[in-house]
Length: 168
Image (cartoon, rainbow, N blue to C red):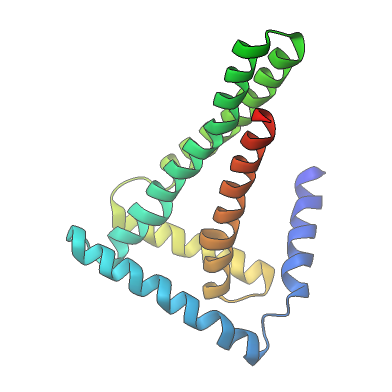
């Protein structure tokens, strides 16, 4: 039930953006080209081709940073327990441990689904993104930007804000 509701809300959100218009496609293309150019340049620095650097950076590196940011609330809650020593701190610590556990499970799922070799991971990721783009009625470029830029930055921001709220 919850999964269906989430899928419907996500599809509704994406479809309201009406990304099929030419104007929005022209807005999406420059940031996508900028991102792919950045990956190509980064790949040259590490002597990896585009497929390899895309997987290493977008899946493994960004996933690891997201995992680390997911640990920030737990670290903040642990510090709160040490300083305050009250039952609310322990409840908060438990909630943050559960929250971080979700990030661990998600990262493990990404590593298992997009396993080596890197070319296989890239092809699998492209297939998954094309499927999501088709279901949401948006372009491949748009779903790439939504997931690997906007959604990623939003989750990092939420983790930092959550940690800041725990500390203060």
